[in-house]
Length: 545
Image (cartoon, rainbow, N blue to C red):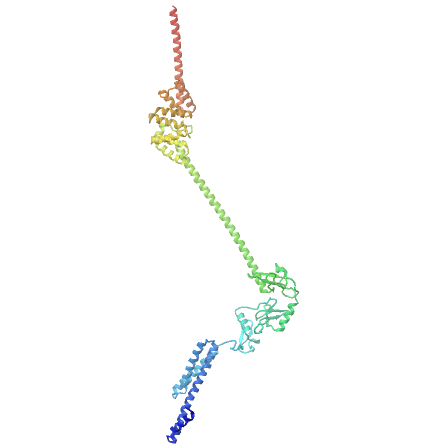
């Protein structure tokens, strides 16, 4: 609807009322409109107050946008409520609104005051720093520190980083690079400190502080000092540096001026190499750096560590060697002990074996066996100790399975325990041509199997092997008519003579008896011949008569 029509409509409505009423209506309308404008203005003011408050808090505490908006609307609500209470008709509510607004303002101020930042958001420094003998102080205003009397220098981002390094325990160290960076490439601020000696030489350091020898405060470098240092460095004679095997013999510092005479290079492992002049490392191309007392201390510590490691390695080698010697000695001792035990076991075994054989020889040996050991046991005595002889010879045969003597003696003892076993043993022994076994086997053929011809055959083979018992048994077979020979007497005497020569006691006695019998027989024959001759002579005389 056009404005003039609204005005006409409004005039027609007002024209219906009295003039005074018309004035009252206009005043009321103006009052309502003014109240609305005041309320809108009031709320806008509250909003901007809350926004300013929230922005300062968000900037001071670096709040994220979402949290900052939450603080904004919370602050706006608090300001609106407290502002409304401040204009309340109730005195109590007014005091609550005024007190709450004051508390909000105080809390805001305290929150802002807690922020101790070095720089504002626009990068302008809010503080300065002062070097003391024990620490670095930061003050809120540049000028002279009333406590130390030293200048409070402006704080920059680079200086703030250096101060943090200093507070972490780092201290100024000499810069040994041949081409150091004096100023920050972004801000142009100095990042190197210097000290000028009495001789005019300039020493560079990487941190603020005090000179480690003189105790004087190091100063931040400027362009003039940097240029002087470059000229000073350019005056050094450029040549190929020589490596120093032992820098202590060369000398780290000049005895007259105190200036460093040695440069160094550090590899990736931290090992140091020393050279007699500036230059570059021949392998890596890294610039050599001038020596400092810290580097010397580090190198000395490395040398000490190397010596300690070398001693430790030597001690370890000696310990290992001693352990090896001790181990070898222990092994030798154990080997000797094992050898001794083995020798003792072998000796014990040998003694046991020998004992079993000795027992078998002692209890069952044949006195006429040419291979016996010891005097032997006659057959009639063996009968009374056959049990122990059998046991001893069984052990001897188990210990010496290839010794035929023990098998033979086991067979002798077995004749009183197991005739079949004895027969089998003697059969095996005769196959092995053991001489004494033939007489025993022949006797078993004769008496057990009643086979005289087999017995004679065994006796003959035994006699051919010089077994005395077989020879005596043949003599017995001749006497019994079981072994016919052309001249029995002569055959018996020959057999008994050979058996007697072999040490057969019975054959020796029988041989003498046979000789006597032979002599007696010859004497009888001679007497018979003489009597026959005498009788013939008598007969012839009678005939002649």
